[in-house]
Image (cartoon, rainbow, N blue to C red):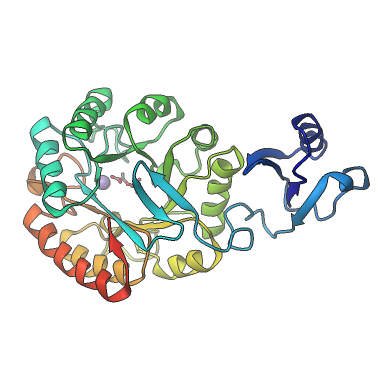
Length: 332
Ligand code: PEP
Ligand code: MN
């Protein structure tokens, strides 16, 4: 249940009600909001005088649901806005990992040449094998920060452990929770305490219910700047790396108020398929698209098969722009 308390209810009373109900207390637009388990369906008598409105939900999909907020939440990434009343589609590109100053500088120049705002590159990499490149860590983050200032770009970079969060939050504009960390509740709860946009990637083994419940960890802790990312789920199919769940995206658009970013690169796993998939993603009218590109993909230290060359990305951009124009969306 989500309970909106009356405007004149003070913090002490709000705290008491929240603790009576073992619930979360949020402060939004000048009033207190209490979020309980969805099992609670009625307001107890001694609280009734303080309650303005309340809403019941099924299955703990509450703050993230369209039943609670009919529109899409607005996310502010500095001066770049996603969701809300906009028709913006955030087109994010950049390499899988930060590898060198030259590589990241070339990536920044690609974005600038197309008027794009947001560079992606991982530096704390969540890898399947301990023998693979693990990312440049803090050194990579410093490089990203230099490029962010030099080219006035927004930066999105990933974390897979809550211990990395403070450092990453100091340098990044969007924190990316890696797919393998979707269940890392220490990270999710800590993201909830930050005043920063978060891109929550769906684990390849997670249902849509589990994805939204993961988002509720962040929302209920106080951060409403959450975007969801569909990046492919595991099915019986092995010819492609994962399966991009576009039906799931249609369901999320209908049922969740969180902006949706699609990542065809990690779903497909092979560069040849990315342009077609990206066009399909854009045609769905989503809030964002994240596509890996690299100045020299064959030499990439991670995700070597799926990153587009810069000329391929520029060509793809042309068709994405045409689709965006037709469906009334603006690439930012
Ligand atoms: C990535 O974005 O490079 C990445 C590792 O993605 P995921 O967490 O979806 O595997
Ligand atoms: Mn990658």
